[in-house]
Length: 150
Image (tube, rainbow, N blue to C red; front, side):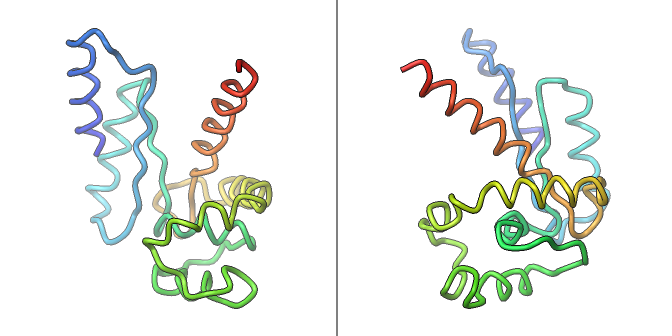
């Protein structure tokens, strides 16, 4: 993914439409540790590329909307946690397009829990760990600037 971002950035520059910044969002999933580390090492060489990660998967960010979690958890267990009655109120479905709206009001808790987790688990190799909140904060800042400008 990071290599693709570098390619797309170069193509945009050739068209006089350069990127200001590129965010690559990756899950740890079942990728080999070497391949996963390579994404971070490659991005580190490019100041305009940031890697946003979730270990083990993006659904950790969703879970952090409901609770703090600092013990390892597998993807299937994350899905079960999200499906609990006091969480999404239904079985978690990865393709559910309404999850964003369901979680919207809980985002401050997710930011807090993710920042706290990152303080104790700063390595993308640690399960659980994530920095998705950094990207969400940047997007919220852009959204606020756009609404203030209009």
